[in-house]
Image (cartoon, rainbow, N blue to C red; front, side, top):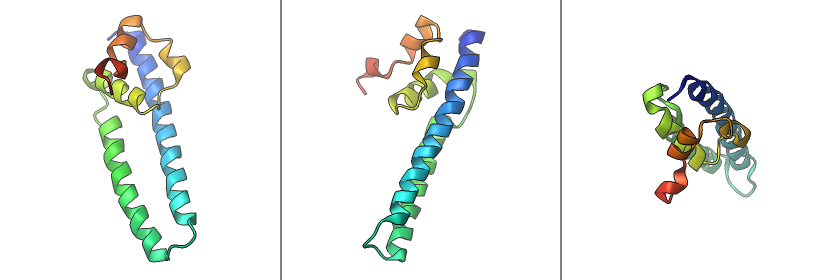
Length: 105
């Protein structure tokens, strides 16, 4: 991985974390605001969703290192969390290497 790809990846990752959290918070809010459920039911559903989101976040973002950057970027792209304008700044090789469609995901 080139130094320029690493710098761009860090920006993509930072943006992806923000988008992931924004989406998660919107999901939590939807559960909390849902009508027709008891407070306890909403709490239980939200608890499960928070736990699942924590696992997903760990899979996507834990272990920040150059050696894991390719896999992380592939997962970030698979989840639709990558800033497309930043992706175009990556080298052709790194962009191709992290294309999730090559694995038919």
